[in-house]
Image 1 (tube, rainbow, N blue to C red):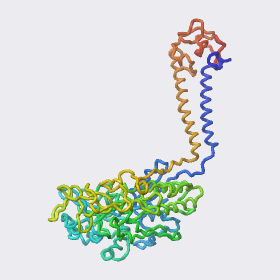
Image 2 (image 1 turned 180 degrees about the horizontal axis):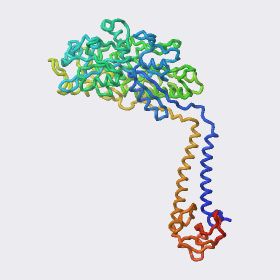
Image 3 (image 1 turned 135 degrees about the vertical axis):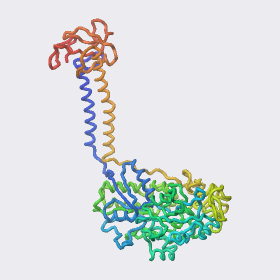
Image 4 (image 1 turned 90 degrees about the horizontal axis):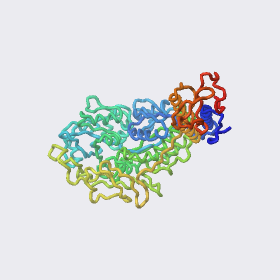
Length: 629
């Protein structure tokens, strides 16, 4: 029998109806959870945490990429202990990947093996950049900036031939500008370093007489030689080198680090003389220009495939080129039976590299690096594809260079390098024998005293790579390279301000998002069902507790002891309750119910209050309307 107004069974008490409702909610939740088991899962591997170590030269941008991909569910940890340690850890199967500026050398400086052993791998280029020379020189408590040095002068400083900032060679590089007679303290790396290897490779090629006399032999080294009794200061890692220079006690220091470190610390870098006779900083533009002369090992059968030969970079005749430009590499495990690799880890490596080679390159310039050109991005994806070949469970679909918006790419002609084309010509005052270009607060002192303070020098102009030295405009006649667009340049960094479109090519100089979607374990459909079940629970379960709480309140207001029963709609509507006679004792109904009529007759559904003599199982005799418990 149903209620005439609600259509619900009249023979069921509110407590029974509540129990039925609860059972329905539980059934819905069980059904939703059961769907998780029944649904097929996607053929995609979940992400597994990966660990790497190595280069501090690359660490600033690598750490940024790691932070970026964490939002997509990728867990990547990286310890920048130096390239040498990174190669050793990778060879010993301590890490899942390594990062290094130079390839395995076969044998290191101490006669120890420097190979990957039996572990299969590929070199994967990840980012370009310039090895910079940052310094700390004060006059009157103010930093001296805009110092220019030739390669020969730098070599003499780092071989202890030049020991004072007032040396005539430094004065000549700065066109008569005299710096204070402060002792020079070269800061070098104390650990095995790819930055050291890159710097000493350049020394060996560009200044062989000075370097070999100092080092005692030809070739590079990852461990910079520091003679006892010299003023040299050794520090482990690029960050500690930078901290040494930036310390309050660092006056007189000069160090070699990747350009990102002084950029982030707010310290000046040396403008280095290039083969065209211009002093330039290692902006992303100057590096991109320089690396157009890089020779890459293109023999896929060679273990050194994709490694760099930089001899022609050091001597690039373009006035915009920065001589000490280079690449950094990931050591990518490619073996099918690699003991550290699982499908999950390979999937993380694939998508981490997809982000790094695509959208991640768009962040390179802002962090003091230079994005990779197209040929190296394409070659990088060829190496990433080897992870799919090693494990069919790895998803490598739709991960290639055509999906990247790299700042070096030119739409419609991927053989061109956008950054190299838009790089501004250096200012006239940065040419050897001219200037120097000075920023605000810097002056030319040819009398033998200060080099800072007193306002901006007349003619402060744009420096190589598009950076302005002190707010000046580009030097007349400097001009822009062919194909240059009207991209606004930040005067502090030499980087583009925002995104700009080249009217001639239609290419975008900023990055477009290519973020990899998060990859949960199992099917996204199944997780959608789980989310639906959770929403259902959130919506319904609080209602159950609310109904229960109101029932207890209603009985308390009527003078009845709280019990396990639910309440009817009378309490739900907030009507006051009063006691009325019943066959089984006293019952409650709203005070507003007409005499002689039950609230149940009006659809309120008020439940009987249990009589002291009721059936012990809660099944009393027939009430006024035959409604039992």
